[in-house]
Image (cartoon, rainbow, N blue to C red):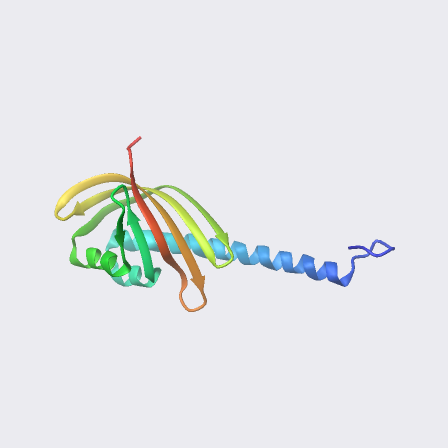
Length: 152
């Protein structure tokens, strides 16, 4: 708001400063979410269970489609720890992300190769992840949906 001389009122200045702070925080969070997604992909590729443990929320609910199998954090970590799933290749083909406050969403299309239960595989997968940010842990995956995608 401007007064009769066209100057901004203190209330308007505070609102503008708050919008700028919010935009800066969203930009920082967007950058750190991108970094967290990259760390997660690297941990998956390397079978780094310790890093996966840091990046997955203890309350994780993941769905593997089309089977609708629900997977917990403990089950996901056990699969990597046991060697039942070993990735030899993980290439990010596409990525989109959005941040709203303490919530982030990543949409990732990947090309994967590796071994599952000892059998070789090559597949394209789509990951839709919901992340939550807190001061103690930073970004962690709270929910995920994982779906196979036909090859182009």
